[in-house]
Image 1: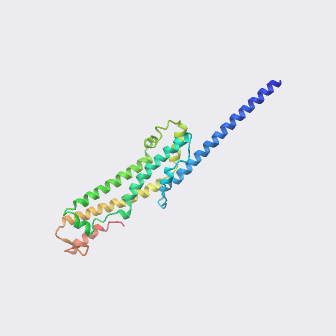
Image 2: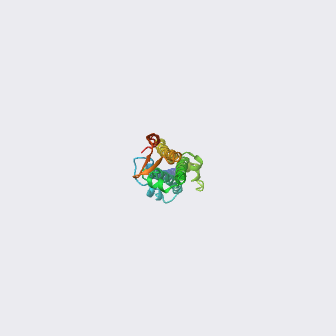
Image 3: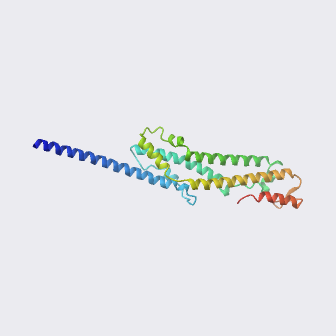
Length: 234
């Protein structure tokens, strides 16, 4: 009877120890998951149009030093690093300080009579904006691209699901809409510059540069030209 009690007590102790080990592991896992989620909440501030903080330092640092969660964090940070780079490229193209005035006297005087260089630059600018916006959206929407960052980690479905849950936890619909509006605005302006240059080509000899401004021989030409450039949104 005594041996039986000792055996039962030993089993209970072993079970309690196993439960304690499991509880400690779950506690550690929860803590690491919470840290990773907090990192992502800081990184995704880049989706806030009113936020001016640079998240590069957060993307480049590592907070989980070991275990499978280190691999998950590496995948998440790599994913957001590529998104951040794509967004930086796009923001540079859309920045009003970087918008070129193709109707300035300097540009008109430095180009040929058909404005070949200007039209090529406009075409290239539009292509870059469309390409970077398309790439940015692919990072956010393409599941295969998202999963590619976990491809070499050799982790179980639990960690893959956690990774997908974390990077999919932020609603970027409003941000994408605002970014799309910015892209359309700049592309509209570029198209308008192209249309204005085409008008100048078609009316060669009927306009000139005087005191840094484009002047026309007839008011009707000036009115038509002003009607075109009125579509440029500041």
